[in-house]
Length: 91
Image (cartoon, rainbow, N blue to C red):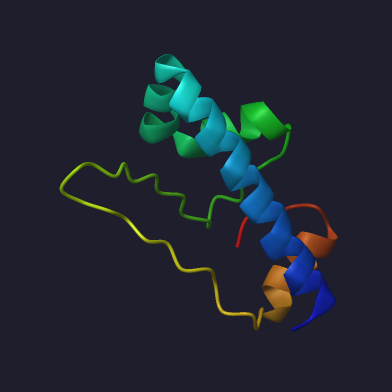
């Protein structure tokens, strides 16, 4: 795997863990994260989420478990450029 892709995936996973931990503890934060995940990510991490990146938050329940698979390890040139420029946080 491309080292830059690995770094981006690790950073995204770290962000996911932090957001999840805070959402478990703070119901108001959780509601904001579900309603507008891009705004919350931008506020929490001080980064810009590109307009063309779709961010969805799914809440699991007793009846439904959501499993998120990571992006494929191969990144496009555009994605690599965005990561290198600090314009993309999540893949």
